[in-house]
Image (cartoon, rainbow, N blue to C red; front, side):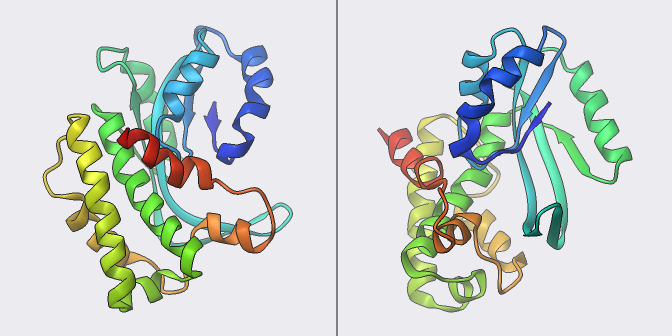
Length: 212
């Protein structure tokens, strides 16, 4: 079961997941909210719950139609317990690759998913505050400086949790920002502009909670 609802809708699907999931069910959450896998493992104890994240930029153009921006479509997932069974996850990754996705089983999924969540948190926070696109963030020194400051704070959280990376988060996401289409905005900003519920709590305030 791939879970890709927004964070504010997660609780609403718990009854369905509890009804359909068994001990053989593998749940892969792809939300931009760090800790979703741990939350689902508590709520759906009978299933095998992974951690996960996805690198893909897309948006709904009209009901039933989704437009992808850019060419990246990568799913990373793995067992929350590093001693957990890997064979079913490797088979899922193979099936996703056969379907045209770039899919990888991580040995350290909490650390790997935090990389994505740190970037989304910083980008969403600045976009929500200033209403800016990725291009404006990339080209404006004031915004870029704030972006790097937020990533530096996220690095302190990662260090405290024992996450080890080959490069600092600032360096990683300097490259990430360079790959974004100039007009890209986070879904949080799109939801705010549309007057819809948003993932502000999970994407921004969750980082504050993690710091404490």
